[in-house]
Length: 132
Image 1 (tube, rainbow, N blue to C red):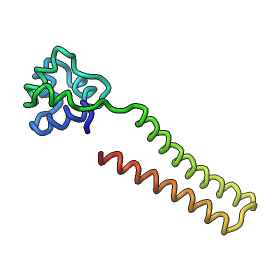
Image 2 (image 1 turned 60 degrees about the vertical axis):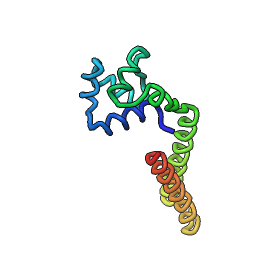
Image 3 (image 1 turned 45 degrees about the vertical axis):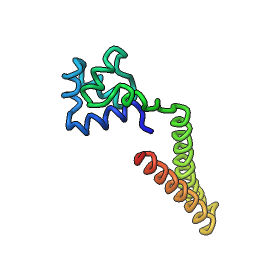
Image 4 (image 1 turned 120 degrees about the horizontal axis):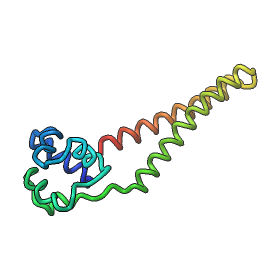
């Protein structure tokens, strides 16, 4: 299910409108529309019916969108940060230990493999999040 902002953006694009055109019809700035679509703010309660009319949907359809789950988003961001950090740490460790002649080739390859696996998982998660 889409967030309110994603729903507004989808319906606006379906109508072939720009953010500026929607903003003019709603008597707000294009920055306000941009914030709605990025879920940084919501349209004023008094303007919801006007927005629904402009987008060609019922108020109920517009409002049935779910609010983004911030805790879930924060958890996904934290997991992605951990994968990136592990990948970077493995790369740096291999370079430093190699300079100090404190690592053999087999261990280097294992550590780099772990780093590459973390980058791969991060990229797959990122791709999945962008497709939703």
